[in-house]
Every structure is written in C-alpha cells, then in structure tokens.
Image (cartoon, rainbow, N blue to C red; front, side, top):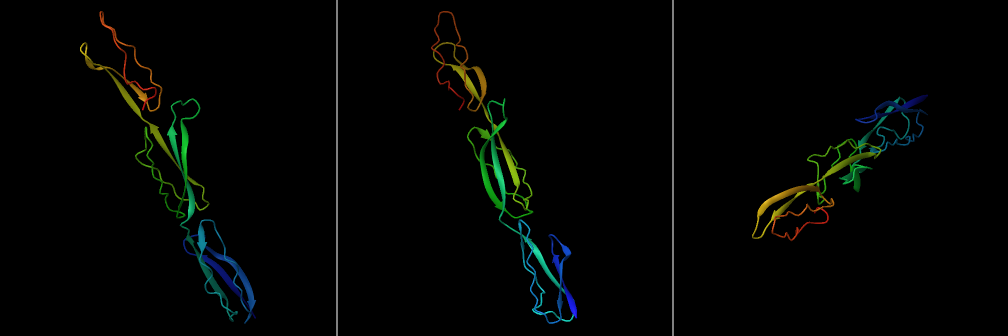
Length: 193
C-alpha cells in the first residue's frame, strides 16, 4: 500500500497546511523534500519525517523564524542654503542590520550648524532589505550683533542681522556722525559660522 506525507509550514510566518505532499509505499526509504526559503527568514527544517514510510499517512512540520541580519538603510540629509534645485542634500547613507518585522534603530548624528529632528520615525524592517529611513537636519540660523564701541556713541546693540549657517554675510552700512570718522566693522565673517 501507499501512504502520503503532508508537509505543513506552521508557526507565525508563511503558514501553509499543505505546502507539499509526497506518496511512498510502505517501508520505502523517505527523503525529506527541500526546505523552503523566504528572504529575511530562516526555516528550521522538517520534523516528523520518518526514515521509512509507516503503514499510515504522516505529517511533517517546519516553521520560519525571523533573521536578525536583515539589511536596511538610514539616510542623513542636510538642508541646503539654496533651495532652487533641492531642499536637502544627502550627507551620509548608513547600511544597518536588524530583525525582520521589527522596527529600525536609526539614530541622529551631530552636524555642526544643523539641528537634528527631535524624533526619528522608525520603520518596520522589510524582509527584502528595502527599508529606508530618511532623517532631515535643519540648517541653523545665527545672529550677528553690531556694536559701536570706543569713546563716542557706544551702543551694544546698534543693529542685528540673522543668517543661516554658511550663508554669505554682507556687513551693514557704517554709521555716520557729523564730525566723526567710523573705522568700519571688525569681526564680520565672510560666511556665517
């Protein structure tokens, strides 16, 4: 007589009550079918496969577990000064690994002159390794305070101007007072530090 081995995928992922079936004659040597594969998962192998076919139908089971080395990418973008073409430019792309189906562990970096977001939207790690987390950093603005110092017309806040980090700075016009010469502004950078 002939009997059937039914291969079932059980567990949390890719369940299939009739993944495959094979028929063997009683006492025939049984060779387990190839283990299935799914990207981002490991298959534990088939259990319950007899060495020789008994005089009854048999079920063999196996299950998948998530891999902990599934790839994902974290991109770090810095805000541009000139936004005519693109608002942000890619500064760094990091290749990371994590567990399929769990959340990414993307973290912000420190970039001089830029503010990182307060939170990063983590994403579920897809089994195919295509998960991408984009982090956008805002360009900081800083203030130049013009002060008039010396013996005459002192003013600790003569004028203030705000510039974004690395923006070209143009000094304000020099003040004038009848009967006095102004020596110019000292300490005005070419670009905003």
